Image (cartoon, rainbow, N blue to C red; front, side):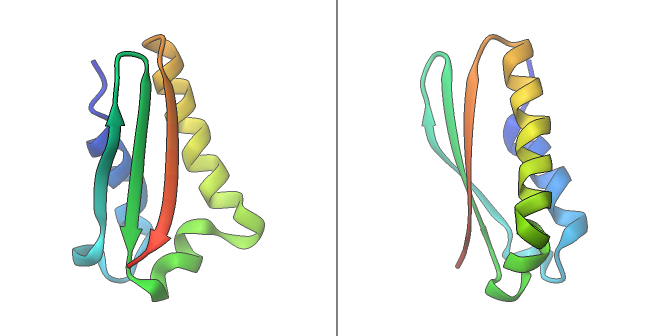
Length: 81
């Protein structure tokens, strides 16, 4: 079983300048629908989202692949504190 909180942190922590400000919050953990919210320092928001949302899309793609392997759907919100 994939630990999505740890996976999200491992994908985001290398991107940020303030790793101590990264929070992963489980919004919903129902049977086959998972929802997470990531809070980062406002100055790191652009680093995590990337130009045109490219990094955020790549992070979501990795999460979708892991979730689909387990027969689940996942949703990720990225926001500043």
